[in-house]
Length: 330
Image (cartoon, rainbow, N blue to C red; front, side):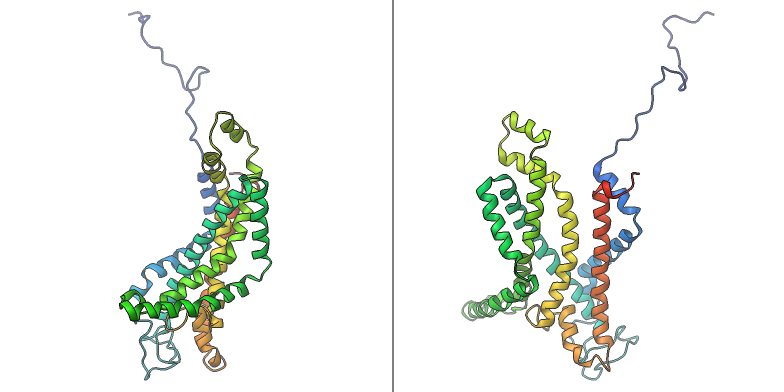
């Protein structure tokens, strides 16, 4: 039987006319994730950061004791089955306080960094896309803040604002008996948030300004301008998203620096105050017993060092992942 003229003719996949399979599309963020996961140090940093977040979220619920519970019969005990990391100078479980300190460090780092990023993004966009006068005003303000030592400026803000704010909160509680103002320890966190955010935002403003100045002459921006897209829309929908890569990397490094700054402020007595658990005030409370009970200082200090090192490893990995020029092609 002869083949019908209308019957389909099957072609070999190797024949010149065969359809080629469409290769899987790759995205910038997908390639960045692959580069990140291939970096061993970044994986170590990601693991440490994940453990920190887990401790901040669930650590207080998993802690064997409350961080304020005192046992004067078990003062400055060595690590044991009952107290995994021992007890401090007034009988508080050190392991429980380290877990609660993880929450304090994470809250301060995340919220202070978030506020500083928000301020820096707004002022950076204004400086980079708002014209000469806006650029000059934001630039001078940035220079003024960055000319001062950041830790000393944060300490000055904390010392200046803490007493009047706490006094005001106590007065409100005496007049209204509103339960929020019964315990003012949360104000320590709020003041530290504000102080650290104030000293961190200039780096984001400068970074965003530089990114926008380098992107505003790109063809897609000129195309949007030619069809009548508003300047605000161009800045928010086209310029800002393309400038976020370096900001994410800078945020990661600032998380670790904010934790170290919070610990330093608490050690100096102008940050988070006892009985609130903070790695900095734990070091300060036990520094006098360093020569004969060194673990009371070593445990929170090593915890802080490991966490900040892990976050910096993750930041280095993100920098390589989001900057293809610094990585090998995959």
